Image 1 (tube, helix red, strand yellow):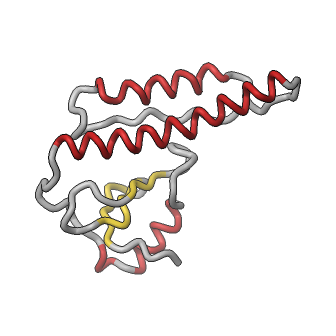
Image 2: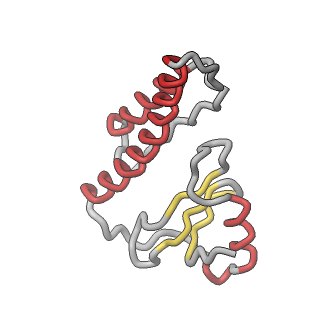
Length: 140
């Protein structure tokens, strides 16, 4: 079992793990892979860890200790990671199409829209403190 250290449970389907209890917005967000397929950690593994280590749960983030600029940088880093993952799908589709190989993707437009929605994260009201992440389209 992975040692996820301190964690914050938002709901049965969303956690933050590897949280530095002295640093707001540290660690990794973990959600169902139905929401984000390339989530770094398995939600089931995190739930198992949380049940086994209730003493590691933090009820809330510490007082805000990072600047808005630092918070924006963290959101942009997560956004860029998600964009890079989606771009790989587009590149694979393009390469296979050019080579005449049948692709799993039938509607790459939804992936392109997802990439644009990620780019527009910084335009959301409340950015960087509040961000609503778009759902990654399923591979068809």
